[in-house]
Amino acid sequence: MIRCLLLCALLLLPASARAEDKALPAEGKPELSTEAVPDSDEPRYVVRGVFSLPAKKLWKIVSDCATYKDHLPRIVASKLVSREGEIHVCEVKIG
Image 1 (spheres, rainbow, N blue to C red):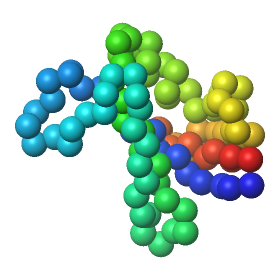
Image 2: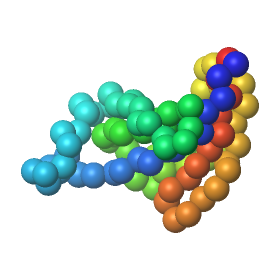
Image 3: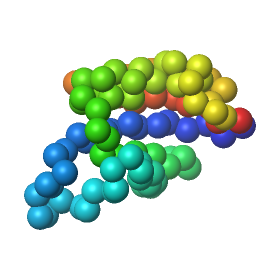
């Protein structure tokens, strides 16, 4: 079983992002990337996406990481570790 901290920092931007921003993924095709975390063997996972949904509805789903195990395949356990504003840090067990 893999243990990791999952940082879901979903940045909801209009389709016309600023020129200096990294290019957004195609609508409805979320992008997953990993970043090294200092002093940790586990990476940070970052998901970005553009969806034709009201931001409030999408954020309600993404920010409720305690219920990921009920809705996502291969997630065997999940819990909210901390929350600061719109940054939610979750512990997720994938099996």
